[in-house]
Image (cartoon, rainbow, N blue to C red):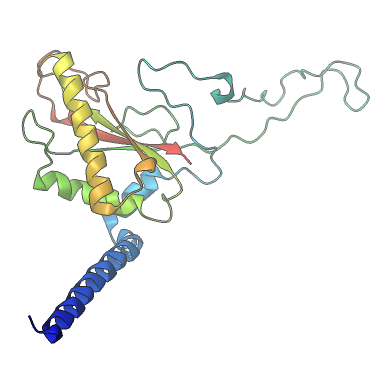
Length: 236
């Protein structure tokens, strides 16, 4: 092969790789901008972002996990206005029985009817369509998860970690549903990492099977609202 052709081919390959790299960089740079122009992503940001001034979320437990350590426990509530002082009587700067003014209540995330998250934890449920008995994401599932990927890449949510929970209805055995929910939660996590380049360290996936039904039902009831993915903010 003539040397000129080899050089030209190498230059063309370099141009292709440079264009591909540039395209990837532009895709990542544009993600926050797309989130700000996507109403569905903006709604997810509002649901998953801790309220201003709220304490960092911590100590969320998966059923069956060890109990929280003492440092994870919430601080004791301040006494109400007018409650007797816990300070010993006889303090020079405070007469015995003086009222204690309670600190202002901390803002907390509202409790939404479409999640089973602990009170005060920012969370959202997303209906994700899978093939029956499968963890393969359908095109409809990818479309439902795209706003979540854009939201997670937004500056509002970038500092936080999230838990991806898989939930099922009661059709089938509990053991089968547990295994299926684990595979589906991992499929959602993988999609967010691969398609939207979300840092894997920010996402953990767990399957909860039919243990946290959004709509309580008996066994073998095909309730679509129980087949969902729940996303919880774990804090920074």
